[in-house]
Amino acid sequence: MGDYLVRCVIDGSVHPSSALVCQEHDSLLRTHYSARRLELRDMPGIWRFYDWLPVKGIIPEVCQGSVTYRSSDLGDELGLKNLYISFSGYWPERGARMPTCSFKDLEAAPTMQRLREHGQGRPLVVASAGNTARAFADAAARTGQRTVLFVPEGAVQRVWTSAEPANTVLVAVRGDYADAISVADSVQRRTGLVPEGGARNIARRDGMGTVMLEAAVRIGRMPEHYFQAIGSGTGGISAWEAAMRLVSDGRFGQHLPRLHLAQSLPNAPIYYAWSGREPGPYAQHAFDDVLFNRHPPYWIAGGVRDALSATGGCVYGITDEEAWRAKRLFEECEGVDILRAPAVAVAALEAAVRSGSVGADDLVLLNITGGGEERLREEGVTNQVQPDGTVSGWQEALQLLEEMGGAWNHRRF
Ligand SMILES: *Cc1c(COP(=O)(O)O)cnc(C)c1O
Image (tube, rainbow, N blue to C red):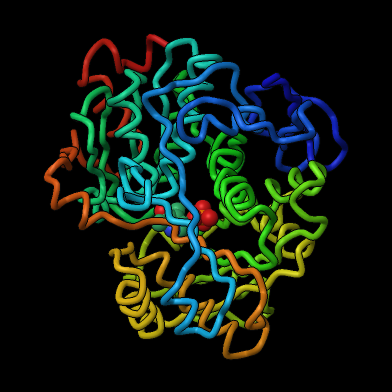
């Protein structure tokens, strides 16, 4: 139990469990679990899916998972009889208690557990547009795993925790998400710190994949359609991979759900790549920065393009106006606040209904990737994480880490 191999998507070659890349191919690595059937474990939260998580143990204190329920009002509004909503966030009435209100909490738990297994006590490095940093800041506080977060200067207010902040260095980077990634990469390569890995991190993908697992278990079968707002598209890849495992399980249906992925215009490289449309210039301010990744894992084997091809998927380009309207509609119908990003998925669902690509009786899963932040703030348990410094490049970042003292001094690793 809990047994798995890490294989290259292209040739199936086996790699060390902690590997992030295949040396031979431009390919993702994927987890192959020895358990063909999903047996739910008597463990908290996402650890119920232990057999399909790449870990050899659990951290019980970081465990909250997504919750699927059948929509009444939004389904009625859109004329959908079988609309299910997967909610990642804080909504205790529905049993959702994610500490930082987005599905990035799902990747933090297995990633932190794997660091216990493979990290040799070294700090973790994470580059983030904000929500991933928040999830890891909270998980670092709860687990004691030291973590260095690189976040664009304009997004540091997104980094808060519901646990008392601890064990993190928050570095604000002048520029956008791409700049934060580039500084984080340079620091990580020049030190012995552990890279989080983004889409290449199997714990990230299989953790996010629990959205599909939880939904299939709750509904009793896989949905026909899966809607999600994407930046890198990692969540889409994860949903596809989880669905492939469910197909081989045999009890949840034999058809892969069709991926309906949504991006916010004009910062929508995956939308343009998939539709073949000519991209215009990117905007300075996106509807939600977490949906903008300039270099998404699109072409890589096992990446977003393959996920779309395998599932007969499609990608939507959503305007700010459509997204704002969809946000209001969702909040009125379902009675909980949501982050901006998932509103883009709601707008895509509206477009799919209009165009007829989703039928009234179809089984639809709408992934609300973040919400309930207002609810959580009302309870007064959020703590802002203060940046330890602002840098323009990796040299300044290394200097900052050195000034932070012994535990963070990269020369020790
Ligand atoms: C990160 C994020 C997304 C996009 O996720 P992908 O990795 O691109 O699949 C969507 N919604 C929220 C709230 C997020 O934090």
